[in-house]
Image (cartoon, rainbow, N blue to C red; front, side):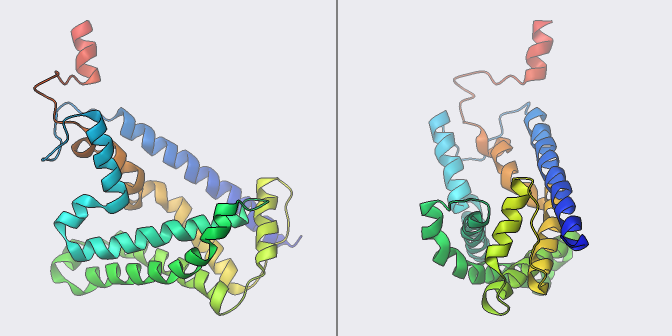
Amino acid sequence: MALLDIVYSLAFYAVTAVFVLGLALRITLYVRSPAPLKIPTMPAPLTKQGVALRMFREVAFFESLFRSNKWIWLFGWVFHVALALVLLRHLRYFTDPVWSWVVLVQPFGMYAGFAMLAGLVALWLRRVLLERIRYISSPSDHLMLALLIFIAISGLMMKFVSHTDVVAVKAFMLGLIRFDWQPMPHDAPFMIHLTLVMLLMVIFPYSKLLHAPGVFFSPSRNQADDSRQRRHLATWARDMEAN
């Protein structure tokens, strides 16, 4: 194996550790954050089943964003659905044999890359062209969008411009999982793509991108409007009453 293969293999393990531990830490902080008041966004469901249905609509269809701004909803929803298809398509590099449903996803995931790129470009143009949005946008907002756009472009180049040896990519990924390191393709699009993805994995747990798991811990979304039926008591308040 070349030195570059060893460096990337070690970097991938380090990046994965940062991603997993960072994500676990942030989710732990979300779980431990106190919710002293009942603050569901109205109209709110009255039961836990209703909350589950509301969360499903929020995660699957971005319901609150749809009510707020139709254009942002369209660009954001297209990007997220396309990203999900692209990620599902990438499972073929980490499984052997490839699951049958992953095989079925392949053509959809391949062209979803274009939809993902279109959604990202539209979201970035919104931040650049609209004065009000440009004023409240921070450098990190632009950095996140630029990073995702270049990941999408480099991924599409691997498929449609400079064909990467996907057999070698799969051997490299499976080798990392099985601790049986294999050489990776050294063409530029793949190395750029892999480097940017590893950079994203490092940034993800500490950036606004963490809204993905964060939505499940939002009191305005995960609470039922049942304050007339049961008393809401935060954990710390319950401990004080017990003592």
